[in-house]
Structures are given as structure tokens and as C-alpha cells.
Length: 414
Image (cartoon, rainbow, N blue to C red):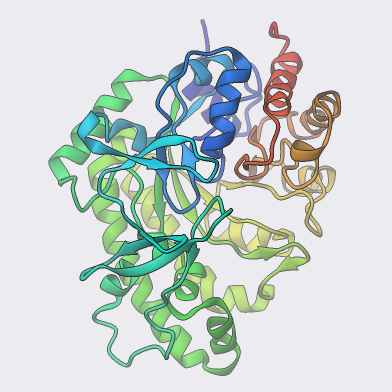
């Protein structure tokens, strides 16, 4: 009996050796590809020209077409691919290199002098900027920059006004519950790929989006009571949204993705003690509730060196984490697999995107990936993805070499 992509991913998540290494490419917003690179990749593969659709405006990520998913044997798909399926859902825009593309019709982006400015919120206000030569937007508005208000009844509205709240499909402001359920159900019936539902539920990052990162980190040290008050209110907002989300699409997704970048290149942004005191209770409450509401696996997007936090994250209910930033302190693949491989699914770490993927030769990329697979693959607990998104400086030959190395390891024809 042939193993489906969905079962292959679930086997890996359950620490069962799958029939072959499962592959994620663009299954979530940190395993994707820059649209300029995607255009070049299609050309390199000799695939027909198609309109480039940028679904994530902030990070500039392209929707992958079915022929690319099939070419690389991708086993995952993001819930958002069940939405914005009609021509009127898109409008023209232009990438930094002059490439014509399409972006979601609801995106409010305006040319102001030499810059593109992203507007969001009610009423619309400038929240992000893309300056000449940039392949992404930078945040420019923080609603709590001058301090956390005493009255947090408007917290949900404040969260909705920051740049990172600019929606990727489906835009829940335009998709009602009935359409949300119908789109998820239709996608589920159309694919045997594992479906990832992007939820967010950030506990550490949303206060940074609200206050600005430097000010929030100072608040953690100087005003712990203010931080606890904000986090308590944030958990309530997240729990309400989580229940609405999973009551609608829980039966149709396999993995629910939360987000919180807790690490830096040199290790965690905060101590394990501070994580346990401030953020672990919220994570534990959200992840427990998710599993009560639906038969989902919980994955956390968490960049950086997070090894000192992994035991606590696992204790809070985590099943998998991405992108496994192996170039950071403490994130050496062999040590991670040895110490956490029976408890944690490593969703990533398959190819270093800081130095190898953009700078190595295709032959070096192939060897690098094969070495990573030898470490991560045994006994399940591994889904291949490169370490975060493929950026605009990556040669398409290296992208092909990376995915073909997986086929080679799996014993498939390249």
C-alpha cells in the first residue's frame, strides 16, 4: 500500500520511521521562497511561465504552483492555498527587480516617494515600509510605543493594527465562518498532503510588535507586573481566537502552527528562568487547548539558538519546531538529535540558508544536505525544510541541488 504524503508527515511527527524523508517547501511562512528567486527557479527547471503570486506581502513569499510541488516531492501544503482562488482576489504589483507579480487584492500598499508604504488597521495607517533594494517590509508603527495602557480592552484592535497582522490568505476580515469552513473542507478533499494551519498565538513576539523589541525587553526586566498584565490579557485574546479557528477548520488540518522567535545567533533572547516565569504558562494553555479542540500536532516557529529552552517547550506540549537554525550556538544537528530526537520533531535544519544555500556550489549543497539527512533521518522525528525562507540571493541551481539530494537519499530517480 502506497504511503500518502499526509501519513508520511504524521509518521515523522509520531517518531515512526517513514517510508522516506517527508519534505516541506512553502507549507508555512518560514519554509517558502522569494518571488524573484521563484521566477528564476521556474525558468531554470524549464517550466512554463506563470503569473507570480506573492501571498505574504511582508516577507515577500511566492505561492508555489503544482508542477513545482510535484517536481520536488513536497508533502505539505498550507491552509491558505484553499483561498484567494479567483482572478478578482489578486491585483498587479512590481517586485524590486522589476518583475511583474500579483498580490492579494485587499493589500493596501502605496507608493510614497521612493518607498512602498504598507497601510493597515482601522482607520488605515502606515505600518511598514519597503525602501529601494529591499525584498521585504520593515515595521514602522508600534501602538504601545509610549507604554502599555492601563485599559487593555482594546488589545485585540491594537494587535490588528501592526504590520505583522497584515493578512495572508485567507483574510478572515473578508472570509466569514461558512466560507472558511468550506474552503478548508474543499482543500482537504483535494490533496493528500499534510495541511498546516497558520495560527500564530505569539506570546513573546506580539508584545514586541506592540511595544517595540527594545522597549519590551526592558519592560521584562524593569516592570514585570506590567508584562504579566499584558500577557494575561494576550492569552485571553489568543484562546478566544484559537477556539474560533479550530472549531472551524480543526477537522481539516493536521498541524497547527504557532510562532515565537525566542532565539538569537548566540542563544536565547531570554533565560530559561524568564521563559518559565512569563511565557511558558501561556504556551502551555494554548497548546493544551489546541489538542483538546482538534486532533492536531502543535508546531512552533522559533528562530535562533533555543536549545536551553527545549525541555520547557516540550513540557509545555510542543510536538515540533522549525526552522532549526543550525548555525546558532547550541543548535548542532548531532547534539540535537541525540538529546531531543525521541521527543521533538525537527521540522527543518536540512540545509543552512545563511552560508551554504546562497554561497556554495551545487555539489557542496548536495553533500551538505546528505550529511544533514544522515543525522536527522533515523527513527523519524524529522521533516525536511531548509533553514527558513529561500531568499533573493540564492541561485536556482542550488535550490534544485538541495531537493534532488533528498530524492537521492530516498532512493528516488533524480
